[in-house]
Length: 139
Ligand SMILES: [Cu+2]
Image: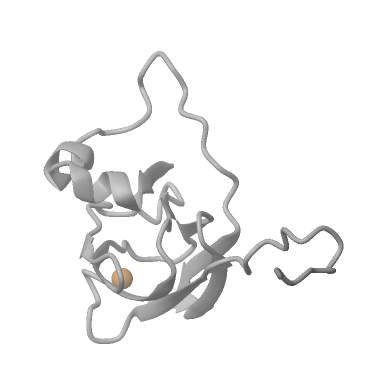
């Protein structure tokens, strides 16, 4: 499985990440557990729309009988997902972490007119720092 951090993805040339070619390195990357999984089935993303919290990851896995490839990502942080072809024979998968809240649209590069979806990334509610919900006014 390949993993992309969206912020990192945009900070470096995507071509460099795109030709990594697997996790053959000596240090295994620690991947955050995916908050949501999107299956690719019957030339569609299922579910086509998902919601996660900011900082969480989405994992796309190919359970189809055709190859797919994540392409353009449109949203608060836009970019090209160099997922490469996500092969169905190996049930390939790609994971992306979303560090900015907002609505992202994406599509399959191989089936761009029929295969698309959205990821809604919500920011966590502000933490209550008043200590139990009480507060005091200043003078
Ligand atoms: Cu596709």
